[in-house]
Image (cartoon, rainbow, N blue to C red; front, side):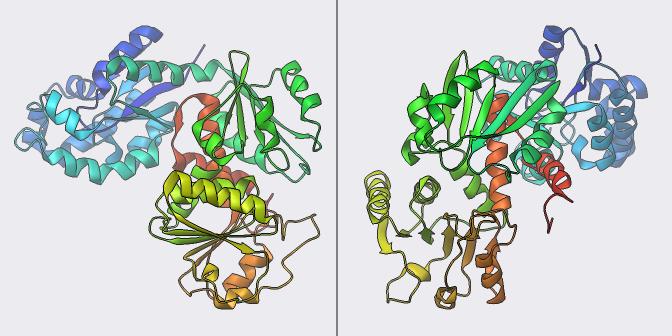
Length: 455
């Protein structure tokens, strides 16, 4: 059976050749070290090519060799550290290849790898730091997956074998909630995962509140590999799981369930997803005051993540004051971060909640089909002009809150961004591998065009 090539990229000394050769033997595939391939084609060593033609001459030879190697079938291709410098190289290698970024700490490389035979590094090995800084964005841009090479070659090989085996796997997934018909989850997860697995299905399952005890056995009957959890089950699902990770336990809610050896493992990717969305637009929780509207599972998750990321203070405005107080108490106990609860109204009562740098709506107010919206938006007049207004709602794409914020010239973050970010983190759990964001994000956005107004 024809399989995609496994294409290894990363900085010089990251172990692409040594581990790639072992991987090829384990998979019974052809192994191509691109530098050796170039030398054989040019009948000259890499050092001689650099000396006689300069780096540009070498890059031309590298491009021609990459095109030829990309046409091979079922190969493991270990690329030189600079192959990512030319878009044409990566387009050719990606066409029939799964590209994996082998990420090894530079300090580890300098301590353990002899770089004397690397033309760009033989005189000044420490130049590797600068090369990595320059190329890291390109490794992130072109890679489908990343493997952490810090734990040695055996662990790195295990990760590569797992990724290589995904092409023969099938994934059966779902999302549960009520309402659920409007969920974009299938339109996000399927394009993110489809290039890497043999087949994938992802269904919407309407599960009424209080019905989890009847639905969980059904999930086993249809042999789901995992499922995502949305309102109103993020907290209730915990009682039906065999294990939950630290992040989910801390937040008191679960949004992703993975089946492992017959057991149900619960995770929460909402916090990391929201933090990733904030960071994707150049913002940060660190040192910021954060106001959260709501006291449900999403509010708790984001509040805990904000504290963990170094928020200076957190304000929670909610109808359910008791739940809000519990969130604040958790934050104070775990992180010593200042936290204050406020009544659920939107008048300027002289407190600091609308002075926050980041303001997040975690309630269903403004959601399509729910029938409830904010009664007033004049509280936005009390917000600082450099504040970021966020809404977790993604249907509609631009809520009333975000529209009113933009009218006042405030920076906004749409719920769809967070939805995609948390979904990609869930997909890493489904596959047991680190999916790189950039290529997956582009596939998702392309798939949502024509399905979601405004994209």
